[in-house]
Image 1 (tube, rainbow, N blue to C red):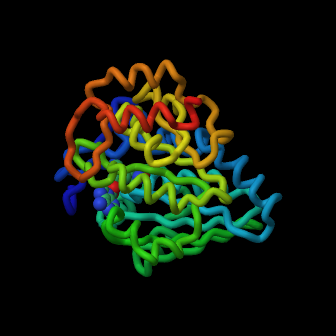
Image 2: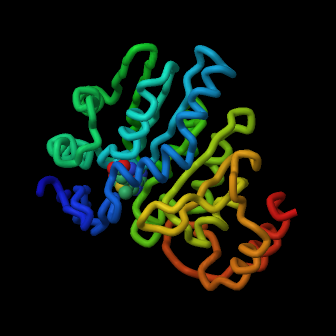
Length: 288
Ligand SMILES: C[S@@+](CC[C@H](N)C(=O)[O-])C[C@H]1O[C@@H](n2cnc3c(N)ncnc32)[C@H](O)[C@@H]1O
């Protein structure tokens, strides 16, 4: 144990990082490597999108936003999946603390997802920025440290490279409500500009989250199972990027749900939809 984090061994024998203060394990059932593969690499079709981007816009980077860098599993598994492919990658990782990454690096062998990237993570921790070069693959990786919800509305955020993919991995809404509010996802949608195709994946399938994303202007679909969950959530700034869009049958269930109203402030609470939310949901282009 160190710095408020602990290694825990999961039932399948793999190891994961647990934050003692929040009392949550980062990848609690199938482990970091498998969850990152299923939820982000396969679901976001990272390899195919990276290749298509290189062909459509040669020389310009494909951009990943890694929201909740934590112990680095999601982003490292994503980079490893792209490293054998020709192209240029730009990563922005966000977190208000680098302690879990530092902790994970000191247990890299047991965690098993660092591959050859241990020195790269060391470089990132030392200077906030790192480069990966492998054959005709190039990546620049920056970490932006601070409170993500406060950073998003700033002019600086407006200048960040626009995302093609967002790996959204905060703690649960009950423990970490500031990361799941309607203003946050609305601002994120504004930064995911229409002319850059963008998909966002996250582990939650909660009605509250899906309503929040829809009201923030995202198109939203049922995401892949991960071993822990039978469904996750995939959102996009364009409808054609969603394989299994939420249907009108889902909308009917949401209208009856006792926990569907988005959080307008960073205070966790469960409430049925307000009249205004019911109207705006029913008018969402996805359900027309
Ligand atoms: C579940 S962990 C992320 C696990 C990580 N994606 C991985 O693959 O190891 C959630 C992360 O969100 C970060 N976080 C929570 N609230 C935040 C905030 N307000 N601003 C920035 N980061 C935040 C936490 O510090 C934590 O590292």
